[in-house]
Image (cartoon, rainbow, N blue to C red):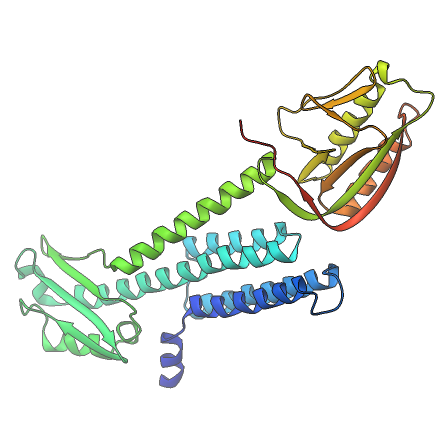
Length: 344
Protein backbone atom coordinates (compact mmCIF):
# COMPACT_ATOMS: atom_id res chain seq x y z
CA UNK A 1 0.00 0.00 0.00
CA UNK A 2 1.40 3.43 -0.95
CA UNK A 3 1.83 6.23 1.55
CA UNK A 4 -1.00 8.10 -0.19
CA UNK A 5 -3.27 5.09 0.28
CA UNK A 6 -2.32 4.92 3.94
CA UNK A 7 -3.16 8.57 4.42
CA UNK A 8 -6.57 8.14 2.82
CA UNK A 9 -7.23 5.06 4.89
CA UNK A 10 -6.22 6.87 8.05
CA UNK A 11 -8.77 9.59 7.45
CA UNK A 12 -11.64 7.19 6.69
CA UNK A 13 -14.69 8.30 8.68
CA UNK A 14 -17.30 5.53 8.65
CA UNK A 15 -19.79 7.62 10.63
CA UNK A 16 -19.75 10.34 7.97
CA UNK A 17 -20.17 7.76 5.22
CA UNK A 18 -23.14 6.30 7.05
CA UNK A 19 -24.62 9.74 7.67
CA UNK A 20 -24.46 10.56 3.96
CA UNK A 21 -26.15 7.27 3.10
CA UNK A 22 -28.88 7.83 5.69
CA UNK A 23 -29.51 11.33 4.29
CA UNK A 24 -29.91 9.88 0.81
CA UNK A 25 -32.37 7.28 2.08
CA UNK A 26 -34.33 9.98 3.92
CA UNK A 27 -34.55 12.03 0.73
CA UNK A 28 -36.10 9.01 -0.99
CA UNK A 29 -38.54 8.52 1.88
CA UNK A 30 -39.59 12.18 1.83
CA UNK A 31 -40.02 12.08 -1.92
CA UNK A 32 -42.23 9.02 -1.63
CA UNK A 33 -44.27 10.65 1.11
CA UNK A 34 -44.79 13.75 -1.02
CA UNK A 35 -45.75 11.54 -3.99
CA UNK A 36 -43.05 13.19 -6.08
CA UNK A 37 -42.56 9.87 -7.83
CA UNK A 38 -46.24 10.01 -8.90
CA UNK A 39 -46.95 6.49 -7.72
CA UNK A 40 -47.52 4.91 -4.31
CA UNK A 41 -44.59 3.53 -2.38
CA UNK A 42 -44.59 -0.18 -3.09
CA UNK A 43 -42.42 -3.21 -3.51
CA UNK A 44 -40.13 -1.58 -6.08
CA UNK A 45 -39.43 1.39 -3.82
CA UNK A 46 -38.76 -0.90 -0.87
CA UNK A 47 -36.45 -3.05 -2.98
CA UNK A 48 -34.52 0.03 -4.14
CA UNK A 49 -34.05 1.32 -0.59
CA UNK A 50 -33.08 -2.15 0.63
CA UNK A 51 -30.50 -2.32 -2.15
CA UNK A 52 -29.00 0.97 -1.02
CA UNK A 53 -28.92 -0.16 2.61
CA UNK A 54 -27.29 -3.45 1.61
CA UNK A 55 -24.72 -1.54 -0.45
CA UNK A 56 -23.82 0.48 2.65
CA UNK A 57 -23.39 -2.76 4.58
CA UNK A 58 -21.09 -4.08 1.86
CA UNK A 59 -19.11 -0.82 1.96
CA UNK A 60 -18.66 -1.12 5.71
CA UNK A 61 -17.65 -4.77 5.34
CA UNK A 62 -14.97 -3.78 2.84
CA UNK A 63 -13.64 -1.05 5.12
CA UNK A 64 -13.67 -3.42 8.09
CA UNK A 65 -11.46 -5.79 6.12
CA UNK A 66 -9.15 -2.92 5.11
CA UNK A 67 -8.80 -1.94 8.76
CA UNK A 68 -8.13 -5.53 9.81
CA UNK A 69 -11.19 -5.65 12.06
CA UNK A 70 -13.01 -8.58 10.43
CA UNK A 71 -12.37 -10.80 13.48
CA UNK A 72 -13.19 -8.12 16.05
CA UNK A 73 -16.12 -9.37 18.14
CA UNK A 74 -17.71 -5.95 18.74
CA UNK A 75 -17.56 -5.12 15.03
CA UNK A 76 -18.97 -8.51 14.02
CA UNK A 77 -21.89 -8.06 16.43
CA UNK A 78 -22.61 -4.54 15.14
CA UNK A 79 -22.62 -5.79 11.52
CA UNK A 80 -24.95 -8.65 12.47
CA UNK A 81 -27.37 -6.27 14.23
CA UNK A 82 -27.40 -3.94 11.21
CA UNK A 83 -28.10 -6.73 8.73
CA UNK A 84 -30.75 -8.27 11.00
CA UNK A 85 -32.51 -4.91 11.37
CA UNK A 86 -32.61 -4.59 7.57
CA UNK A 87 -34.01 -8.10 7.20
CA UNK A 88 -36.78 -7.34 9.70
CA UNK A 89 -37.72 -4.01 8.09
CA UNK A 90 -40.73 -4.39 5.79
CA UNK A 91 -41.39 -0.74 4.87
CA UNK A 92 -39.29 2.07 3.43
CA UNK A 93 -39.57 3.97 6.73
CA UNK A 94 -38.39 0.96 8.72
CA UNK A 95 -35.36 0.50 6.45
CA UNK A 96 -34.50 4.18 6.92
CA UNK A 97 -34.82 3.86 10.70
CA UNK A 98 -32.66 0.73 10.69
CA UNK A 99 -29.98 2.59 8.74
CA UNK A 100 -30.21 5.64 10.99
CA UNK A 101 -29.95 3.70 14.25
CA UNK A 102 -27.99 0.54 13.54
CA UNK A 103 -25.97 2.01 10.67
CA UNK A 104 -24.76 4.86 12.85
CA UNK A 105 -24.01 2.43 15.66
CA UNK A 106 -21.98 0.27 13.26
CA UNK A 107 -19.96 3.29 12.13
CA UNK A 108 -19.31 4.29 15.76
CA UNK A 109 -18.18 0.77 16.64
CA UNK A 110 -15.83 0.64 13.64
CA UNK A 111 -14.27 3.96 14.59
CA UNK A 112 -13.96 3.03 18.27
CA UNK A 113 -12.46 -0.41 17.67
CA UNK A 114 -10.08 0.96 15.04
CA UNK A 115 -8.88 3.57 17.54
CA UNK A 116 -8.38 0.88 20.19
CA UNK A 117 -6.38 -1.25 17.76
CA UNK A 118 -4.18 1.74 16.89
CA UNK A 119 -3.68 2.44 20.59
CA UNK A 120 -2.55 -1.13 21.19
CA UNK A 121 0.03 -0.84 18.43
CA UNK A 122 1.35 2.41 19.90
CA UNK A 123 1.51 0.70 23.30
CA UNK A 124 3.48 -2.14 21.70
CA UNK A 125 6.13 0.29 20.45
CA UNK A 126 6.45 1.96 23.85
CA UNK A 127 6.58 -1.42 25.55
CA UNK A 128 9.84 -2.12 23.68
CA UNK A 129 11.51 0.89 25.33
CA UNK A 130 14.37 -0.40 27.56
CA UNK A 131 13.94 2.46 30.04
CA UNK A 132 10.36 1.52 30.90
CA UNK A 133 11.34 -0.80 33.75
CA UNK A 134 13.20 1.98 35.58
CA UNK A 135 10.69 4.76 34.84
CA UNK A 136 9.10 6.56 37.82
CA UNK A 137 5.79 5.10 39.03
CA UNK A 138 2.88 7.04 37.53
CA UNK A 139 4.97 8.71 34.82
CA UNK A 140 2.93 9.24 31.66
CA UNK A 141 3.49 9.54 27.93
CA UNK A 142 0.94 11.15 25.61
CA UNK A 143 0.82 10.47 21.88
CA UNK A 144 -1.52 12.12 19.37
CA UNK A 145 -1.63 12.98 15.70
CA UNK A 146 -2.24 16.30 13.98
CA UNK A 147 -2.35 16.52 10.20
CA UNK A 148 -0.50 13.23 9.91
CA UNK A 149 2.30 14.35 12.24
CA UNK A 150 2.88 12.38 15.45
CA UNK A 151 3.28 14.55 18.56
CA UNK A 152 4.75 13.09 21.75
CA UNK A 153 4.61 14.52 25.26
CA UNK A 154 7.11 12.84 27.60
CA UNK A 155 7.62 15.05 30.70
CA UNK A 156 9.53 12.33 32.59
CA UNK A 157 11.86 11.77 29.63
CA UNK A 158 11.08 8.05 29.56
CA UNK A 159 11.44 7.41 25.84
CA UNK A 160 14.74 7.16 24.02
CA UNK A 161 15.26 9.01 20.71
CA UNK A 162 15.02 5.66 18.93
CA UNK A 163 11.58 4.91 20.40
CA UNK A 164 10.33 8.41 19.60
CA UNK A 165 11.54 7.97 16.02
CA UNK A 166 9.63 4.68 15.75
CA UNK A 167 6.46 6.36 17.01
CA UNK A 168 6.79 9.27 14.59
CA UNK A 169 7.29 6.87 11.68
CA UNK A 170 4.44 4.56 12.72
CA UNK A 171 1.41 4.52 10.42
CA UNK A 172 -0.70 3.48 13.40
CA UNK A 173 0.35 6.54 15.40
CA UNK A 174 -0.29 8.80 12.38
CA UNK A 175 -3.84 7.47 12.03
CA UNK A 176 -4.84 8.14 15.65
CA UNK A 177 -8.11 10.04 15.91
CA UNK A 178 -7.86 10.62 19.65
CA UNK A 179 -5.09 11.21 22.15
CA UNK A 180 -3.38 8.15 23.65
CA UNK A 181 -2.24 8.31 27.26
CA UNK A 182 0.08 5.65 28.63
CA UNK A 183 1.01 5.47 32.31
CA UNK A 184 3.82 3.48 33.92
CA UNK A 185 2.59 1.12 36.62
CA UNK A 186 4.97 -1.29 38.36
CA UNK A 187 7.42 -0.95 35.49
CA UNK A 188 4.82 -1.68 32.80
CA UNK A 189 3.11 0.73 30.39
CA UNK A 190 -0.71 0.74 30.68
CA UNK A 191 -3.27 2.40 28.45
CA UNK A 192 -5.44 4.94 30.22
CA UNK A 193 -9.06 5.55 29.21
CA UNK A 194 -8.75 8.26 26.58
CA UNK A 195 -12.39 8.74 25.59
CA UNK A 196 -12.99 12.45 25.38
CA UNK A 197 -16.02 14.00 27.07
CA UNK A 198 -17.75 14.55 23.68
CA UNK A 199 -17.00 10.92 22.86
CA UNK A 200 -18.52 9.76 26.14
CA UNK A 201 -21.59 11.92 25.55
CA UNK A 202 -21.96 10.50 22.04
CA UNK A 203 -21.68 6.95 23.37
CA UNK A 204 -24.36 7.63 25.99
CA UNK A 205 -26.63 9.22 23.40
CA UNK A 206 -26.19 6.19 21.16
CA UNK A 207 -27.01 3.87 24.05
CA UNK A 208 -30.13 5.89 24.89
CA UNK A 209 -31.25 5.87 21.25
CA UNK A 210 -30.66 2.12 20.94
CA UNK A 211 -32.67 1.55 24.13
CA UNK A 212 -35.46 3.81 22.84
CA UNK A 213 -35.62 1.87 19.57
CA UNK A 214 -35.71 -1.46 21.40
CA UNK A 215 -38.48 -0.17 23.68
CA UNK A 216 -40.49 1.07 20.69
CA UNK A 217 -40.08 -2.27 18.94
CA UNK A 218 -41.13 -4.13 22.08
CA UNK A 219 -44.19 -1.92 22.51
CA UNK A 220 -45.15 -2.39 18.86
CA UNK A 221 -44.77 -6.15 19.14
CA UNK A 222 -46.78 -6.15 22.36
CA UNK A 223 -49.54 -3.99 20.87
CA UNK A 224 -48.89 -0.92 23.02
CA UNK A 225 -47.56 1.35 20.26
CA UNK A 226 -48.93 2.34 16.86
CA UNK A 227 -47.70 0.04 14.10
CA UNK A 228 -47.62 0.74 10.36
CA UNK A 229 -46.69 -1.61 7.54
CA UNK A 230 -48.02 -3.76 4.71
CA UNK A 231 -50.61 -6.36 5.52
CA UNK A 232 -54.23 -7.41 5.11
CA UNK A 233 -57.69 -6.02 5.76
CA UNK A 234 -60.08 -8.91 6.39
CA UNK A 235 -63.85 -8.52 6.54
CA UNK A 236 -65.54 -11.51 8.12
CA UNK A 237 -69.23 -12.33 7.92
CA UNK A 238 -70.96 -15.19 9.62
CA UNK A 239 -72.89 -17.77 7.62
CA UNK A 240 -76.66 -17.53 8.00
CA UNK A 241 -76.83 -21.06 9.38
CA UNK A 242 -74.54 -20.15 12.29
CA UNK A 243 -75.77 -18.54 15.49
CA UNK A 244 -73.87 -15.99 17.53
CA UNK A 245 -75.25 -17.48 20.71
CA UNK A 246 -73.19 -20.59 20.05
CA UNK A 247 -70.04 -18.43 20.08
CA UNK A 248 -69.09 -19.82 16.67
CA UNK A 249 -67.96 -16.35 15.63
CA UNK A 250 -65.71 -16.12 18.67
CA UNK A 251 -64.15 -19.52 18.00
CA UNK A 252 -63.57 -18.79 14.32
CA UNK A 253 -62.04 -15.38 15.01
CA UNK A 254 -59.67 -16.91 17.53
CA UNK A 255 -58.66 -19.46 14.89
CA UNK A 256 -57.98 -16.61 12.44
CA UNK A 257 -55.91 -14.70 14.99
CA UNK A 258 -53.88 -17.76 15.99
CA UNK A 259 -53.18 -18.63 12.36
CA UNK A 260 -52.11 -15.06 11.53
CA UNK A 261 -49.73 -14.84 14.48
CA UNK A 262 -48.29 -18.24 13.60
CA UNK A 263 -47.67 -16.92 10.08
CA UNK A 264 -45.59 -14.01 11.38
CA UNK A 265 -48.16 -11.25 11.90
CA UNK A 266 -46.54 -8.31 13.65
CA UNK A 267 -49.81 -6.92 14.96
CA UNK A 268 -53.58 -7.50 14.72
CA UNK A 269 -56.54 -5.22 15.32
CA UNK A 270 -60.20 -6.32 15.42
CA UNK A 271 -62.53 -3.39 14.92
CA UNK A 272 -61.04 -0.63 17.03
CA UNK A 273 -59.29 -3.01 19.44
CA UNK A 274 -55.57 -3.82 19.16
CA UNK A 275 -54.79 -7.32 20.35
CA UNK A 276 -52.32 -7.78 23.20
CA UNK A 277 -51.25 -10.80 25.24
CA UNK A 278 -54.22 -10.47 27.61
CA UNK A 279 -56.88 -9.81 24.93
CA UNK A 280 -60.12 -11.78 24.93
CA UNK A 281 -62.39 -12.55 21.97
CA UNK A 282 -65.88 -13.90 22.57
CA UNK A 283 -69.44 -13.65 21.35
CA UNK A 284 -72.08 -12.72 23.91
CA UNK A 285 -75.59 -13.04 22.58
CA UNK A 286 -75.78 -10.87 19.48
CA UNK A 287 -72.59 -9.00 20.32
CA UNK A 288 -68.90 -9.61 19.74
CA UNK A 289 -66.64 -8.53 22.58
CA UNK A 290 -62.93 -7.89 22.05
CA UNK A 291 -60.99 -6.64 25.06
CA UNK A 292 -64.45 -6.50 26.71
CA UNK A 293 -65.52 -3.87 24.17
CA UNK A 294 -68.41 -4.33 21.71
CA UNK A 295 -67.31 -4.65 18.08
CA UNK A 296 -69.54 -4.32 14.97
CA UNK A 297 -70.25 -7.73 13.42
CA UNK A 298 -71.60 -6.84 9.97
CA UNK A 299 -68.87 -7.30 9.00
CA UNK A 300 -66.11 -7.85 11.53
CA UNK A 301 -63.08 -5.92 10.26
CA UNK A 302 -59.65 -7.33 11.03
CA UNK A 303 -56.44 -5.43 10.25
CA UNK A 304 -53.13 -7.26 10.34
CA UNK A 305 -49.58 -6.04 9.66
CA UNK A 306 -47.12 -8.50 8.15
CA UNK A 307 -46.19 -10.09 4.83
CA UNK A 308 -49.48 -9.99 2.85
CA UNK A 309 -48.66 -13.03 0.71
CA UNK A 310 -47.66 -15.22 3.64
CA UNK A 311 -50.63 -14.12 5.76
CA UNK A 312 -53.14 -14.71 2.95
CA UNK A 313 -51.70 -18.16 2.29
CA UNK A 314 -51.96 -19.03 5.98
CA UNK A 315 -55.67 -18.23 5.99
CA UNK A 316 -56.26 -20.71 3.17
CA UNK A 317 -55.55 -23.48 5.65
CA UNK A 318 -58.59 -22.67 7.79
CA UNK A 319 -60.96 -21.14 5.23
CA UNK A 320 -61.45 -24.52 3.57
CA UNK A 321 -62.01 -26.35 6.84
CA UNK A 322 -65.52 -27.88 7.01
CA UNK A 323 -65.85 -26.51 10.56
CA UNK A 324 -65.09 -22.90 9.61
CA UNK A 325 -68.30 -20.85 9.63
CA UNK A 326 -67.17 -17.45 8.32
CA UNK A 327 -67.01 -15.89 4.88
CA UNK A 328 -63.88 -13.78 4.45
CA UNK A 329 -63.13 -10.91 2.11
CA UNK A 330 -59.35 -10.41 2.08
CA UNK A 331 -57.62 -7.30 0.72
CA UNK A 332 -53.84 -6.92 0.50
CA UNK A 333 -52.58 -3.46 1.42
CA UNK A 334 -49.22 -1.71 1.01
CA UNK A 335 -49.73 0.25 4.22
CA UNK A 336 -51.96 -0.33 7.23
CA UNK A 337 -51.82 1.45 10.58
CA UNK A 338 -52.86 -0.30 13.79
CA UNK A 339 -53.81 1.76 16.82
CA UNK A 340 -52.04 1.33 20.14
CA UNK A 341 -53.69 -0.53 22.99
CA UNK A 342 -53.87 1.88 25.95
CA UNK A 343 -51.38 1.33 28.76
CA UNK A 344 -53.21 0.68 31.99
